[in-house]
Length: 166
Image 1: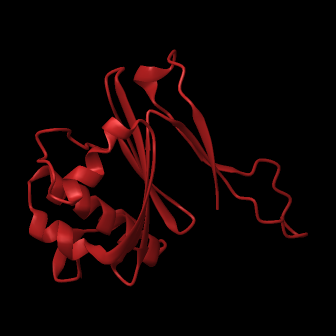
Image 2 (image 1 turned 180 degrees about the vertical axis):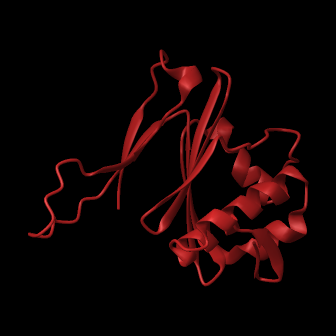
């Protein structure tokens, strides 16, 4: 099923149409961003991003490829962001990718009113997302981990870890 956000057509899987529509639309916006980046369509990229995009980066300074790409400082040829997974976690979309044993990244996107308003990038960093809200009395939740890095090619590599609380 096709949906339009900011005059940009995105594909929403048919099987998900009965589920959480706002979450599916949010995920489709992020998927559209990666597709536009892969095709070098910077006009579409700029339509998906808020003009006051909040940005946060954790990793080696030389690895700020997404910032350089979105600001036009470098081209897609420098580094290709091809997500291996894109998941909704709460109000965030988490994309994860890796290129062999040298580069592993996690992107956490926030979308409001059809625009990406916040971007957190973790490069060569293990990420765990936890829900730190106090549990409601009627729901007993033992494990508060909502999402965790799964870099298969880097399983034996030592990387710093970050806990993202939402």
